[in-house]
Image 1 (cartoon, helix red, strand yellow):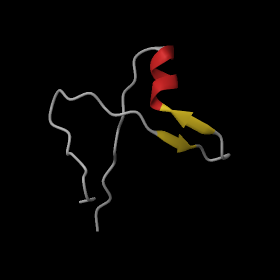
Image 2: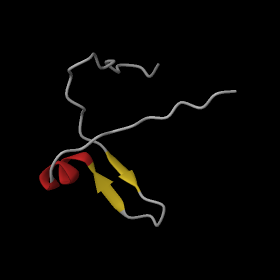
Image 3: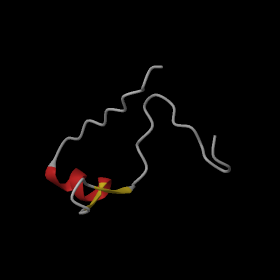
Length: 47
């Protein structure tokens, strides 16, 4: 776990973040929220 990082609980709102797409464009959660409903999916790898 990262230092000073609060884990999210069920029902918490996701904090804003910025990520890069495969073609190196920046995309942020706050900009996506302006367009409507967002579903974030985190797929965990299995080994």
